[in-house]
Amino acid sequence: MASAIRTDTPDSVVGSRNELRARQMRIAEITEMIHVASLIHDDVLDAADTRRGMDSLNSAVGNKLAALAGDFLLFRAFSAAGSLENTEVVSLLATALNNLVTGELMQMTVTPAQRCSMDYYLQKTYYKTAALISNSCKAVAVLSGQTAEVAGLAYQYGRHLGIAYQLIDDILDFTGTSASLGKGSLSDIHQVTAFLLATSTLKFA
Image (cartoon, rainbow, N blue to C red):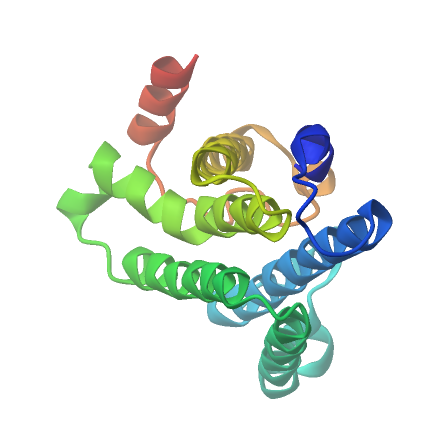
């Protein structure tokens, strides 16, 4: 995202282009810390044994230490966000984290009727996955002093990318193997239905 908007960086932005790129890279690092923390917490909630082809952290050290490790990553992420000294960027990242938790709650409390609702599935998918990517993309644009229009486009790019990523991940849960996925296949089958996946594939093809 930083590369896509670099030619339009206003002259009024404080600091050199290299300094700006370093600050934008920090957003990428913060995003990854939040993402990894969410995976650690997910594995605790799902009692998962593997992650990325290795023992999950909760499997290796237990739920208590794993949960604390996830909390620590979130603390470090927002400590780093604060160092950017941009309240809008911090607000965007906080919104992403709030949405992530909301998506997890939607997933845990889904009713049989909601499980067959495409609108519910896409809303949950936005909260759990796309919100972090979209708000992070927007944060990169905001940090470089872009207009509201450009920041909005960055947000939409991240939103579509995040939803597409999750759709593929859910489909691979049916078609992939444990070896190729780095986790148990069908591990997320309780979260989606074959009907929704088939409909999603046709709708977004």
